[in-house]
Length: 316
Image (cartoon, rainbow, N blue to C red; front, top):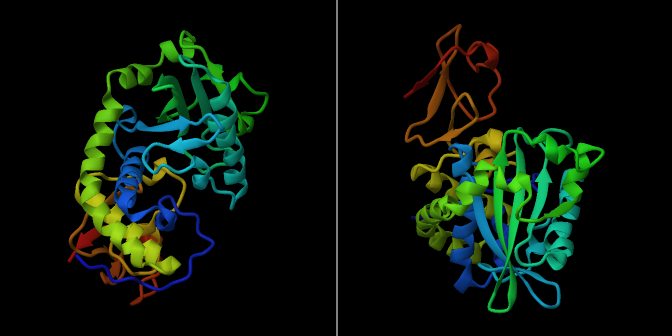
């Protein structure tokens, strides 16, 4: 397959899946890293049941205090953003999670880092990052899981005076803590469901990740990276790994292309992306003209009816 790279400006946009980060990953590892992250994206922002959207990953804590992702072999700090007040808060929390608590925790402990719903964030669901601390070949390993929840439990909210403080702190719990033992998601983790789901997603992603890795090698500008990211996102949709925009407040590469009329993307009433092989249109209620969906058109070009009045979807 070939990809026509588009040119546009988007420097101020914070993307969910930023393929420019892979430019510094050696080519021999890049395919695996892209597949791993693309699989994590369709899990965490997926439209499946909550307990099927747990994203697992492993991090090694080195003797000198580094936190190394086991797939990329790079320090996880490279994934921290600080372009917005929210990202700055969550960067503080990530440092506490991986470095401060990662150093302090002993094998058998469980580290938690909470992202509340709403507040300073656009998240419409809460999220917990959990790290089970184990020792393997003399190294401390964080077996991490990104877990979506509709709301944070009341017991968690009691940990701080103000809910927003949770974004900047991590906590070490002992395994017998009731919050852990009484959680349905912990049973799902122990039964190996997240590992199975991630493996299935990676298997699908590896096909397109090989092409994307080579595209990244040739990419030279922001528009190239957006086009490459959208290529990967659309491929995963075609394989049945749909994403739900409610589950993720960031911007997908498909969003960026669709807003500029460079890509036809079908979006259902809940904001979920759906695969489509034909362009999607709205019927104008006044003149029955066909108005393309996802191109930023707010009024009918034929009679100036407002987009809010469009009454139905149809496909040509």
